[in-house]
Image 1 (cartoon, rainbow, N blue to C red):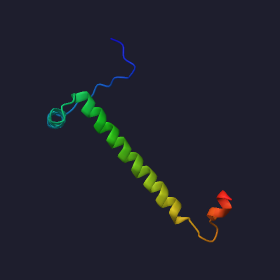
Image 2 (cartoon, rainbow, N blue to C red; image 1 turned 30 degrees about the horizontal axis):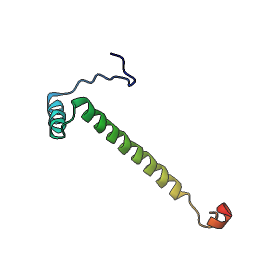
Image 3 (cartoon, helix red, strand yellow; image 1 turned 60 degrees about the horizontal axis):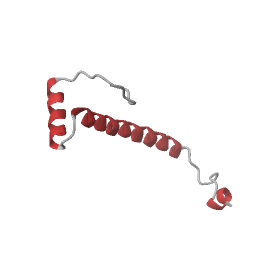
Length: 75
């Protein structure tokens, strides 16, 4: 059976597998869908941390004296 989406095999420790199985059963979804959703959420968290660090870095170099006004940027 062909599929459009790539596949991933993952080896989990027993407690992690049990927790995943419990969450999947609780939400009436398959193990793979629950794992996919949790991976997606984790990647979003990593992305949030990346952008937060980037914003903090830029904030350190921000100067109100050299910043452009709304009118200067948008006319």
